[in-house]
Image (cartoon, rainbow, N blue to C red):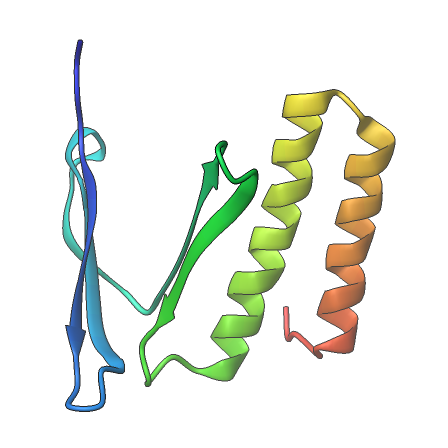
Length: 108
């Protein structure tokens, strides 16, 4: 069996708030690439719930956070469509993402 790793290194300030983050992906050729935010979800099939880690650096601009969340919402719709084949639900999810963009005043 082949294994690979994706890692995220987080530097914290004295109050345990992320100041700097970098990520690494062996197979993707990514090494110590800086990032200002990460959202990781894993499925726990024993408890039947999603477990999450949401981190962002204290200097991440709000407009970039809004764009980040908007893009995640769009990708969730795409992922759902590929997994389920339910194009109508995926389209609704994309509409919801666009409504988020309008309500949060994302500058595109």
